Image (cartoon, rainbow, N blue to C red):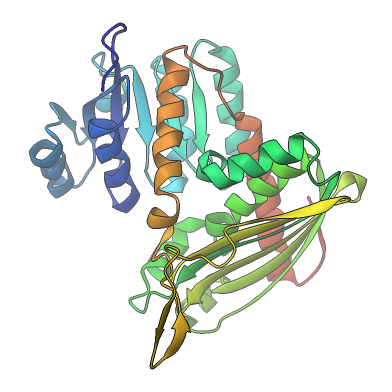
Length: 343
C-alpha cells in the first residue's frame, strides 16, 4: 500500500530489457512510496509495453530529454554497462537521485568520475545494484559475522553459476559485458569485501576454460573462470563463475572464520521437496537469478526509494562499486596474461 502521508517519489526507468522490465514492474506495482512516472528506451516495442502493461504516462526515446524531465525525481538505469557512468553523471547533474545496475563502469576512471560528481551533490542518493546485499540469507550472514558468530572471518569462497543457455545470449552480450568476472563475479567480489570488513585487495590470480561456448574465445573470455583475491591482513577470496551448469542457477557462498563457518545458498534447491522416482532421489533447482534473488531485487529498490525519501541511510557507497570494478579488472587481466596481477 502506498504511503499517503508523503509525496510519492516519481521514478523514471531507462532500459527495458530483461532485467529492466522486472525493475519496472516492481516500481509500478510493489514499491512503497514510489510511482513509475516515466520510461526511456530506444526500442519502440519496449515503450509500447511500458505504456500498455504498466500504464507509464511519459515515454522517451531520447535519454537527454528523459533525464531532464522535471516530472521525475529519480532515475533507475538498467542500460548497457558502457553507458552507466555518463548516464549516472547526467542524472546527478540534472538533480535526480540515481540507481544504477552493477557494475558501475567497466573502468576505474569512470567509476571515480561518478564518485566525484556525486560528492558535489550530497543531497542526492547515488546507489549501485549489488542485489545480494539485500537477500535475507546474505543479510543475516553479514549480521551474524558482525556479531562475532564465526570469530574473525578470513576466507570467502563464492560462486555465481548460471544454467547453460544453448542459444548463447551471453555470448552475444560478451563484447559489452566486460567478461565473465565483471559480469558475474563482480557480485562475489562485492560480497567478499562486505563480509570480510572491506579489506583492500593487493593482488589476484585467475584462470579459466571454455567448456562449451567457443564463440567467447575471440573475445578473450571464458565460460568457466576461477580467481583468488588476496587482501591486506591475510584474508582471501576464492571465486568461481560458470555459464554452463546443467541443473539451473547455483549461487552459494562459504565464509570461514576462526571460530566457525557460514554457508549461504548451498545446493540451490527451489523448495524443500525431495522426489524419489525411477531416476533416483532428487530436488528441483532454481532456474535463474531472478528466481533465486526475487525478494532481494524487491528489497533493493525499496531501499533505494526509502533513501531518496529520507527514510534511511544509503546502505552501500559508490566507493564499494569502484573497488569491485578495480578488482574485477585485475582478475580479467590475470585471466588473459596468465600471471598474478596487482590490484
